[in-house]
Image (cartoon, rainbow, N blue to C red; front, side, top):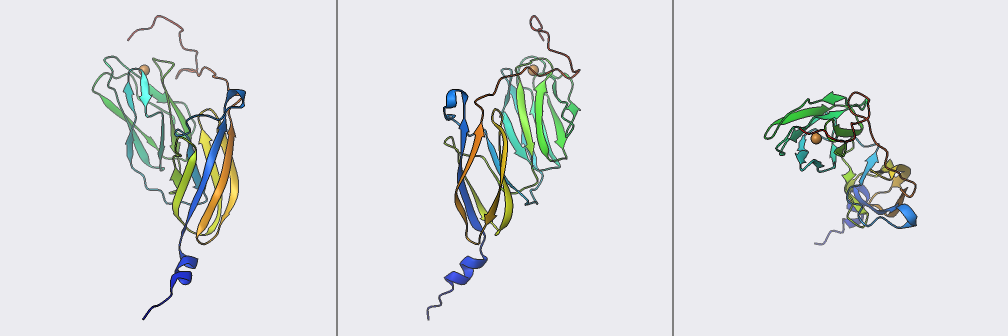
Length: 212
Ligand SMILES: [Cu+2]
């Protein structure tokens, strides 16, 4: 006997939310690589804390953008043959790991949701961002900006996107049973200008001549 249960199952099943992020860069051109952006559904909770790693290598923090749930810790192993001092002055997660050398790892914990810039107090060019989100629906888009969340229960959410140059955008969406596709999100980085951040003491970095 053939039972046709498909419509009933479809009504109650969580769906797929799919779309595309576009970022306008200087001169109105679309950014060629959006894989560092973060897209998530606000209004959903339950992301589980874990542990991730951002390494210091050749005076870079790699990867530059990570997403974690509140309560997670981030380890910062130093692979360079000189000292780094990873810190954040963000009110959401202030920390200062102090100076430490090659082969050593120090960690920081991120308890509150927020977008936390992380720097090195020795090398002004080093940066990373820890995005702390409660939502279990987090996507890192493809290079072309396409994104997808699976298993989304029907309901109202805020679809949010953040990019290091493009900032933050958000819009309300209604996800029906079975999902929602064809979404478009836009960020504008055409007016973005790099501004120098301050060191952990709130002072400008010495411009030249420091060696560790
Ligand atoms: Cu450094």
